Length: 402
Image (cartoon, rainbow, N blue to C red):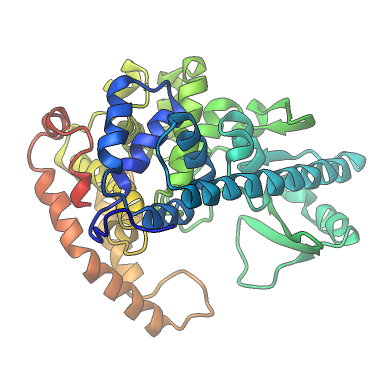
């Protein structure tokens, strides 16, 4: 693999975005032309690095294959290897899922499969990169589940305690298997409050690649995926999950109910800014009523919406030098007046792993915040004008300058 032109400053975001559009939707002539023009002078090594960092290389491979582009042989071979390696790991993961569901069924313990294979089933299939299994159980079943997993060779992972899940692992000849057992969805320091009882009541039985399981209802699944975005810094892997689910299943979502539920979960800002970003940055066919309800109406909302968009753009353009992505999670709250106290607590070293000293934590976070100031300044300035007008002039919202 190597650079075609040696343009070290070239950023691969435009090509990745266009390839994703081609891979996740019916390609148009204009998109194909965009691929041809964008790939001229492409640094293929950097494209591979960013795709790997964003954990979307298998999806890019499918897009490259369908686009019939003149890709260097070594580059295409690398993407092909990433795809089939992902397929192999996902097949092993499905075997683990079948074992796990069987163990819990034997003792009549109800469980809901979250993320991982459940998201893959709704969207990308075997091209989705997953490394562990996540299940939601009732809080009172944890002691019994703990004994079951230990009996089958899984051990609780040592580390700081979490107030919403417990992690187990097991070494095998093909790698380490990891299971996250959730007895809640979100840790208490975060502002989001998903309705656990409602998730259980609305969950349904389905079959994931021939494995019978219980999964969240579609709207709940979308919200739970959106809720992961700040924690994972708007990772493109999750953005692509949402993109594909909306593309395939959006017609079955009652968007008024969906957004009302987002508000009840204290996820109004995060959810609406995500829908707006999907529609304006990538052309995802968000329902008109959902886009209308997701438009920012106040300056504070325009700041938050721009922060989300720029965090996503950074993932495509500068994933190895994040700036906005380090600050954006603390801005995405429904009560804007709480942002200053959140940032102060973060700067003082509150929360996080107890294994890192408070002073070291505060120093690291302060430097990260200072590094993000230029990006934050751009967001504040860009939000003064009309964001909707900016989108009419530039659908990507100026993400080239991240």
